[in-house]
Every structure is written in C-alpha cells, then in structure tokens.
Amino acid sequence: MKFICDTERCIDCNGCVTACKNEHETPWGVNRRRVVTIADGVPGEASISVACMHCTDAPCMAVCPVDCFYHTQDGVVLHDKDLCIGCGYCFYACPFGAPQFPQTGAFNHRGKMDKCTFCAGGPAPDNTEEEFHKYGRNRLSEGKLPVCAEQCATKALLGGEANLIGEIYKHRVETRGYGPELWGWNLAYDPGKRAEIRNKGEGPRTNQVPNASQNQPRKLPT
Image 1: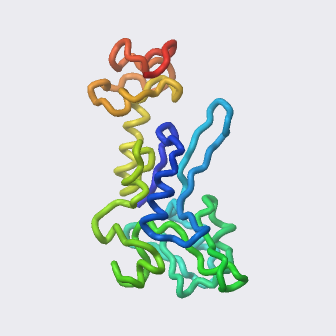
Image 2: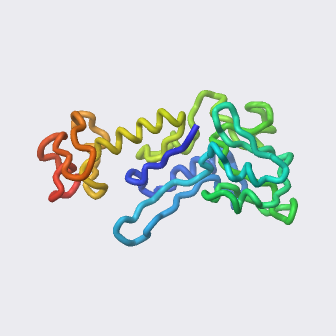
C-alpha cells in the first residue's frame, strides 16, 4: 500500500488535512497529513500532500531503539504506542516529517509518537474503542481507502495498492497535454478527449483531439 500525490492536480485546498484530522480525532497540534507548497510565488509553484509514505525500507524503523515499528501484510508501516518512549529518533530520521509528538507527559516531554496509519489502525484489536483512541479509525479493515485519498476533490492524492496507483499515474502522465502549463480539465476528466498515445516525449501531443486547447502550445488551457 502506497500514496502518490499528483502535483499537477493538487490545488492546496487542505481537504485531505481536514478529513484526516476529523476522521481520527487527533489531538491539538498533531496533523498526520499536511500540504507543502514548493517554489511558493514563483513560476513552477506546486503543492504536494505529505504524510507517512509507508516506506518499504523505512528509516524510522531502522533507528527506533525499542523496535515499536512494524510492517503489516499490506506493507503499511505501523507502530506500537505502548512501546514508544518518545525519544524522537524517528522524527529526525523520517525524510517526510511524518512522526508527530503531542508534547504531553512522556519521555523528554515529547509524548507518545503519532503518525499516519494509512487508516489501518494499530496493534490493538480491530475496530475497538482502544484502537480508535490510540491510532484512529481502521478503515482498511472495513474495506475502505484512507479517508484523505477518498476525500480529495481533484483526485490528486491516490492511496492503495502500489502497482494499481502506479498504473493510474502513468496513464495520467502519458495522456496529458504538452507540459504542465497546458494541462486542462477536458484532457484530465473527459475520456473522449484522449486517443492512442503516439508521442510520449517532448513536443505537442498531436495524437489527441485536434484544436483542443491542451494540445496546442500556443494556446491557454480551458
């Protein structure tokens, strides 16, 4: 299970952040997901939704002195709060800044670490009050996707089986117009605007509908 965020669809609405916080009722100061803006205010500005990426070779798992991290059968990285001592090593090791600390009453006053669970709960029994209190809602056990991905209005944030969402993203990239500045609504959401993929490199996408604004480098997108 993995996340992919399509930066050319993300509109910095923070809907994923709000949905996550509401679903899991995380404490004040803890945001399991956040939206980061890159190159803010200059050409090429883009936004990306960031949380735990559930790495196959997770650095947080490598540095934890009490081995509170573990992989599920689906590849989701979870942790046991009963083992966590709040040392903060995972916070410094994670390149995505996923580990969060509520700063209340544990080792070095950090508190027990909290992070994105891919809506898969934790080591407590599934769908119990204990699991919800410690780790939030276990949507995967209910056959549902993470709430952040489900609530994303532009479907910029994808969550699910790595091979499947990888194929979705590959198809998006190959069927877009010439460059991100010419990507538009029709090409992204209207299957009738797509045709056989003939040009996957640089240059106008002449394989698509003639005179569609997304395909013409000299015209603006709709």
